[in-house]
Length: 186
Length: 68
Image 1 (cartoon, one colour):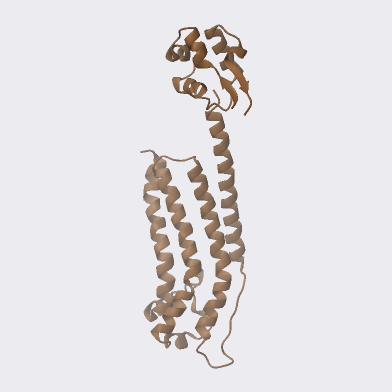
Image 2 (cartoon, chains in turn purple, red; image 1 turned 90 degrees about the vertical axis):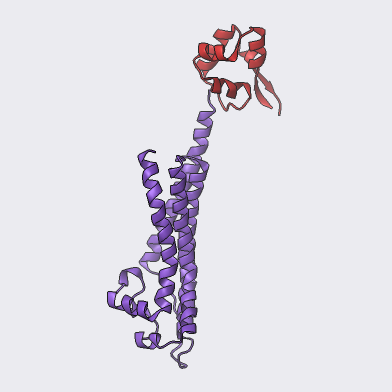
């Protein structure tokens, strides 16, 4: 096994774990009071889950019935699922590297998939924010229910990053075609 | 159809084996097989020259065009 194969063998598990946690953690944060309080204490600003962004106060949120919290937890899942699929695509790419397949149509296709799912997760996060704020405030008194949507620097940079990966995948695909022709040049 | 490589025909005419031709030309048996089976996308002039030299023939004896 060469160094690429060895590293890929280990790294793929990191992305499998990341894909699972990416769905589990947000769901837990919004459905479990203890986890929400820990997030508040930890000021998890960097992860986008800090309670300053909750459309209601933390105390009000913690008093919601479990069924409402589960609904809120489900409302944050669509983008997380798409992001997890992107992470699983990275794991699949690493598995191809582990099997010694570095430069083929399949690896080029995986780059395309990674970029596409990152973009889809960004696109879905916009209406998802609408859904999240609507679901969180739906039981509030009249005048305190709202829906909000916003585009941040993070969305732009994530989209740019995803487009770069898609471009890289396309270049690889064309390069594989050229290599195939060269392999069949006698 | 496109370009057809009549390598089998020339090998039979010269009573030569593929393995011997491949050695003389300086290409692998696999590459020779690619030529024989029509899977080649391109052929270098240097390879064509070596084939003609080994098989004592002209390029036209090896390459034929048939309309698709």
